[in-house]
Image (tube, rainbow, N blue to C red; front, side, top):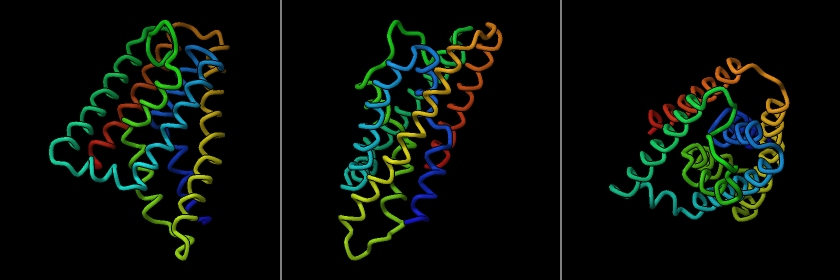
Length: 195
C-alpha cells in the first residue's frame, strides 16, 4: 500500500492539465469558481478511474477508429487550450471567458484528459496490496487517490488565487501565461509520445 501511495503522490503532483487549469481558474476567477471547478474535476477523476477499472476505457481506446479519434481529438483540444493560455495577453487566466468553467467543465476536462487514464491504468492494474480481496483493494485505492488528490489540487488552486492577489506587471503575467502554456504543451507532447 505504501508503494501505491508513493507512486500516486508523484503521479498526481506532476503538472498536468487538471492542476494547470485549476491554477489558471484560481488566478483568473478566484477561489469560489475554482472550488466549483475542482468539484467537477474530482468527479471526472473518479469517473475516469471507474472507466479504467471496469475496462470500458480499454475497450473504447482499443477500437481502431474511435480510440485514435478520441485520443488525438483530446490532445488537439488541449493543445488549443495551451495556445489560448500562451496568447491570453497580460491577464493570467486559463482562457479568456466571461465566467469560469463550472462543475460540468471540470468533469468534461478530466474525461478527455489523457493523463487521467495514463495515471489510473497502472495504479489500478498494478500495485496490488490486497490480492485476496480485489474489490476491497479497488475501494481502498479510490479512497487513497481522493485523500491525496484533494489537497494537492487545493494547493494548486491556492497558488492560482495567490497569483490573482499579487499586483504583477503586464509583462510578468504574460510570461506566466506562456510558461503555463509551455507546461501544458509538454504534457500533451508526452501523452502523444507515450502512445
